[in-house]
Picture 1: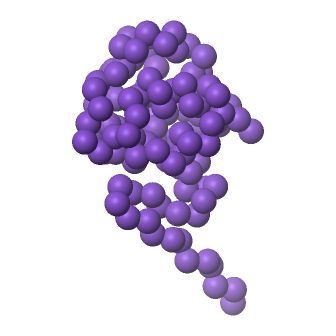
Picture 2: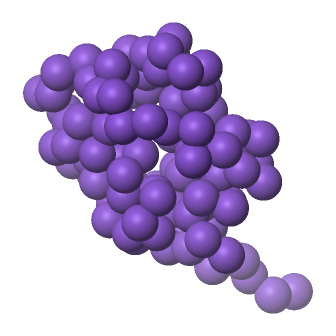
Length: 108
């Protein structure tokens, strides 16, 4: 499943609505490595870097993404869906500066 289809399935948001207008670019905050518009483009390219970038895990970027898209895409929902997909794929919680591994479940 592509990142685009994963986002659409979880959120109902179709990333193809993005017109690459860059209105969502809020500037690069200190805990971001790429702007939001680049994150959206990575999703469209099905590039797994979208699941590993610091921007995805930035709480300040998540907050700033609310209402940032003039076309009505809910970018905060998109970011949360990508966070869940990253956790599902890697089994890790990637927070800025720290990685915690989810311990395997113990069999009874």
